[in-house]
Image 1: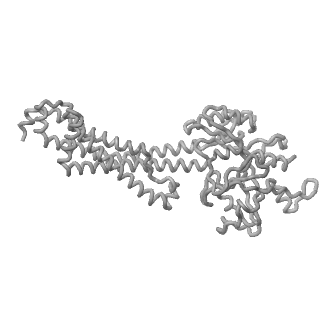
Image 2: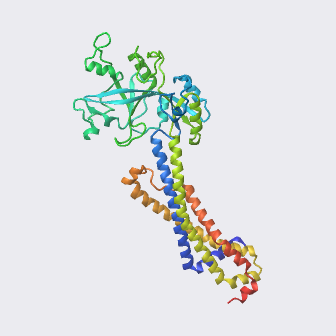
Image 3: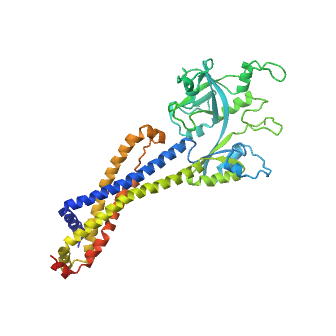
Length: 464
């Protein structure tokens, strides 16, 4: 018997028993929709968690510091009795880190605190000097402007989206975080200045004197040329929202000139407490090719004598919890599909009892046992496929409703899923759900098909 004939006979048989077939398909619809929605909730939660972690430093980046400058787990596990020599971060270290397997790039960063001024408003900011290419690799979104030009002769800066909110009136000491009033400052267009030697600024302001009894000179105010302003409201926080970025080489020149003969804040010192002639990096950011290689690379960096800090432990912990949640949600959905499979088995068994004579006649006429089995398996597959497709459409509708009511509301904001959605159905899940429902239908129809094969032709013909 041809395959097309089997398809036609199977569909015709199901159509003759429309009500029973429809009810059986409805069970598959509910089962498929349940398991897809449950898995989609787990996937959505996982995606939202990864996006939230990425806001706080990224999934494949490692921050490298001098040994002891950051209290990491590796530092605590070190034997304090060992005589360790600290290697300061310079270009040679950057080159060494780039040679580590799975490292795609490494770029240096100099971080220094500074005082930002505009009119009567001021605030402390964390200024990070890095290369133009490194800033581009951060893939920041800008409300205005963009990346600074490292060839510019002026001090260009990129401001985080919460910097303006931190500005407060120097006279009243009031600002956005005190009274909810935003500073009347346009960071992109108004005159903005920055002072790096903050100690000298306050010593001058308070009329202090140096070791020789001379009044402290007022430190230089550097005029800032605004290059870009990051997108986002004052309440949207990420690892860069409070920072100010500028060109690394420009920052080096300013710091070396302004702090000549003095220790630059954040820079290492000699055993006698004096400044080095060379300017070292505060940290080095290492990019890894894959999230699964993070622990290996971080271990290698620690073994080189540096402190490596990343989100790998946080990611691993969150992934374990999310996997448990995924299994529980998938199990709940699978129960519904199991009930649907029992319904398919019952439908096929009833169909065999009702079509006993038909089966006997087919055998007497020479129809092969495999063809008879294939016919009943196709009927079960039809039920699974149609139910799977309808269940997928239903689950997409349910997912859209969940995202509309939960993803855009207060609960969604609290869970960090307002942008990505609480329920997420990727293409692979959609295709797999229909395939799985079809296979479940065929498995449910397997034993009834065996019974149809074993029926005696003569007994089946005599059956009324």
